[in-house]
Structures are given as structure tokens and as C-alpha cells.
Image 1 (cartoon, helix red, strand yellow):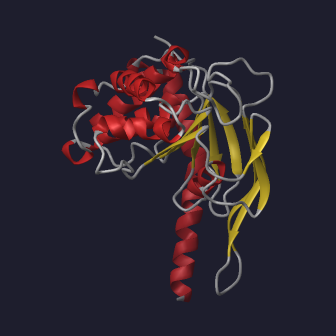
Image 2: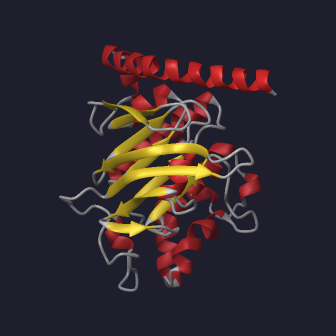
Length: 291
């Protein structure tokens, strides 16, 4: 069953009734010259500097950089949670500046409503958008099946493991039929084995639903395994330092992780990141000596 089969006539998108899998000539997402500064007692603190990129429909793009480089700030600007100091975000050619259901967000911290069952957590977004009960039930069943949690639909979040909670969070985001998924280190708190399982699940969902995803991670292996393109950011104030194409296509086998090409790309990203990580350490040590 396709996602379009689950939407009744009452279902609508924020920017028109446009299916998630439509072909598009224009980029689905465009970031134009995004910068962000925060006021401090000692003056403006620049965390993001003149950042621009575009994404096509069904693409998966990862951003990697050291801690504190501004990558989460960038994602929160795209999600409408933070306003940029300069620049703009365009989704389907329309400028956005506040949260919207067309941008589904999944965070590292568990953000499920603890008083709602798994099923009702997934149904929450469609309910807010006016979907009828039968439609909400179909959406919840479909996406809980997709993430392998149909048998846990009447459990509460506290009864689930960390990996299961993140699967619910992904199902909840997808139930809103977003134009793009924004994922901020969603697997960062998971153990290594669960993280690998979640990565493979995300690839499977991408194949089935043809999702477009902007993914933030510290993990180089994760970025290479999941992405079509990887952007490396500099230390603060973050800007895009390099773009690396990942030529593996959407149908990826776990054995890819041991291939020579995987290791070549991983080494290239590591080299780009190493100097930025050293810059962060040097800046922190210098600040410590002044304190």
C-alpha cells in the first residue's frame, strides 16, 4: 500500500495537495545565505555563517562537523524553530519562517508525549490537521507496521526501549506526510547495534516512501552509509567547507560498510573533519587560559 492510498479526500498539505513523491525540476529545499548570531554580554556570538545549499526530491543529505559548529542551529532554522539573523529558507519555492507539518522533525532526545499510547502519538499530527478517526487509524497502522511496532501500538513510551521510541518518533513524523524529514542526530543516544538496525530501517523507509531527508550526525560511518551527499561544516561559526558525493544509490546492503569505496569516502570525510575538530579544541583551550 502506498502512502497516497492512505489519504482520504479531507487530507491536505500545508502547501497544496502535492504528493510526497512528485517529480520536481526545482529543488525541494533551498537555503540562501543563512547566518545566525546570538547576543552575549561581550557582543554578538556568530554560530552560523553564510550557509547555502539545495536538495532535490528524495535526496538524503547529511551534515557532519565537530560539536558546537552550528549544525543543529541550521536544522532548527530549517524547521522554523529558530530565526536566522540573515538569509532565508525556501521549501518548494516558498519562504518559511515558522514550524509546519510539511517539515517532519526527529530529535536525538525522545520527544513523544508520555501520556499517549504509541498509536495515539502517531495519530496526534493528523488529528491536529483534522483527519477523521478512520484515516488516523489507517495512518498509524501503516507507519507502525513500517517501523515494526504494530504489536506495541497500545503501549506507552515508558514501556519501550530507546530504539523503539525513536521508531515511534519516525512513524509520527511520517504520518504527517511531510515534504522533508529533518533529523537531528536521531540515533546518537542508542547503542551501536541498535543504531545499525535503525540506520537500515531508515534506508528501507526511504526506499518505500521516497522520503527527502536532511540528516545531522557526528558519525562519519553513519553519514556515508545513509547519504547521497555529505556536507562537512567548519568549526564555529559554521559554514559549509566541502561537499562529498556518495555514489551508492538507494539500494544499499549492510556489506557496503566493508567495501573499499566506503572506506575511501570515510577517510576523505575524516581528513576534512580532523582539522576542524582540532580548531575546536584549540579555541576551547585558549578560552580556558583567558578565564
